[in-house]
Amino acid sequence: MYTAQFFSTQLGRASLVSIGAMVLMCCFALNSQVDAVPTVMASSAAITGELA
Image 1 (cartoon, rainbow, N blue to C red):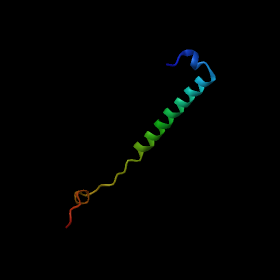
Image 2: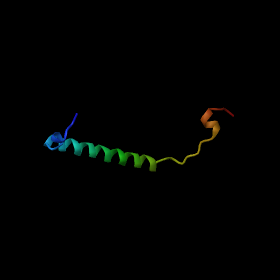
Image 3: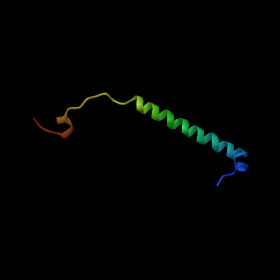
Image 4: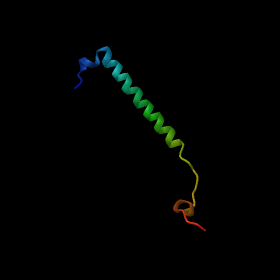
């Protein structure tokens, strides 16, 4: 679909920069989500909705 001739144009270089920026953004978002894992422990009663 895309050839080396396309990527040598200004539009091709802009598309490569855009793809690189999206990959970096996804890596940053994934890392921030992994670091933000909550450490809250829930009881089984709260999870299943049991009444006392």
